[in-house]
Length: 370
Image (cartoon, rainbow, N blue to C red; front, side):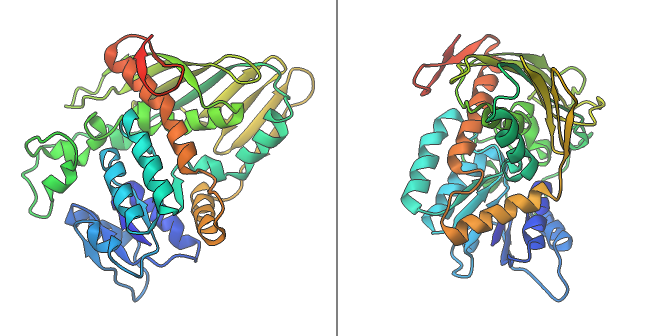
């Protein structure tokens, strides 16, 4: 494999791949030399050195690279994925899959043409206790009619750092970082905390909502958000960021066999205590608290059932990607699932920035005023 984008998340996921014992890292690519050095240190194995490059083209041209992990900023996902698939590489793509709603068709076309495996980074899809909850609770209808799914996740210290201005480092390729984004003058905070800026990332409504919306849609068997209403803003961290530090969203789903339901989402960068982030489902026959640590099913009558998670979600998801490459089967978080997880993200982002409810057109091809 090659690593494209060697920041914090890229290093963590590649560490999981190496932990499977099934992967050999052949190249580290990043637009900033210090990030490449951090990855070399973090991923170091005794007696090993790794080639490194500024751009991803070198890795994609290597015949000894079968697959890539793309963990670059969101705005680079499409162009780098297209290039990797065109080069015949399998792709593990960090979430969110798309940065803009209109990108979905290009992702699908590139994957279909290549015939390669694309796994998206919603690692809950490979969690045994998540699959168990789906099969034993939702598929058997034990919650009755589910009306609400409540998703909460707070407290992200790496997104509330006090970042000081820094002259442009000689080892940072600013033009490569910008990629297809609007051309702007160098600004250190835009690189070092790109998640603050809509040009490069969607903030909480992308980073976090993607995960929990995917879980809710999977459990409910319903990837069709209909309408979103969102409020929030910069409640405390007036530090140059543009994306909100706190958001609240209500997303209404059309419903499949069981009719409409609402997903409510609350998230803040601020240090709000939140020991068990996850999704809480409320049905007419019981409730389910589903987190990365496990789940608690409480029927309206009878004792609660608790299931604890086992093993690492990161390693399980990496292993599933390898399995899909070896067997030719669909990965647990396929490109189609990754694109579905982004539908509520783009709907919510649109509602936030336009300051009014927004909805999907009936065909799901565009987002319009609600």
